[in-house]
Image (cartoon, rainbow, N blue to C red):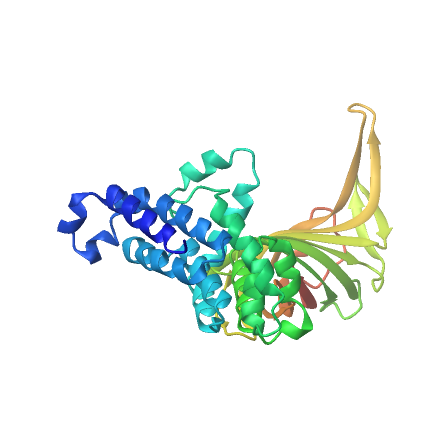
Length: 377
């Protein structure tokens, strides 16, 4: 009875393959998408029936034909790993190769797309990516059940156990399992860490920062004040990068200055300053521990005066403040923290030509320095 499925497979395989298969070299058949498309369902159906009857050793015969005809792919590699585990053969190296081939991404998308109502459309849109085996195929279910049984075996190594957790189909639970202390030194945990770090460099980043903004005014008008800001940054994967950022300064260490508005002079002690900048950065140095980014930018400088007048003719409230160009040049260092984030420090020189501001009577020093801690999401 155990050989029944093999004989059925051989009969159907011959019918699907046809006479032409005898005239095609094996290497060519392995790269023939038409042949693979027609045969993959047969391979998957046959192995599914064998797994459900626990005929694991017999399934290897069909699996070897599948890999010969279609090459190694996600679903037959997953099948191979679980079948070998089922007969007690260590699969640590094969699990590592599965991840190195990025098959875990294919599996995750396979699970994600299988849950959607239009899973059939998703399959036909990416039929080659999903190895010609339809989403929600019974083989997927059989492999999930087998992975669940193997997961309970105490003899499994950490990477084998994590692979079983993934193949059970619950990707979120797999991510939680990887983070457990007992698995931190496993190959999959380390690979997952590098993988998430790589993905973090591919996306836009939001960076918050805070520190001190120290003017060279030597306490005449502008002093050393706390700063806080936020910026939107291009992905770290690029050599040349850019960002737009805004910074608020809490003016607690300043003295009074003179500002003229509508012909009258006012003594002002500002409470808040603001600058908005567009910056260009260059990834000068990078390794696993630090990224060095020189930067330069230009933008708008604004210091509030609190002077406001209501215009009877336009029914508008007009404000009169110190405003001018803001330029900066500096360097930022970032180190990776957690799985996806970065922390660091930025030191910059700022130049603002305050003499350009209409109404400012006091002579501000145009130069300032900042030291700010950074955190990138």
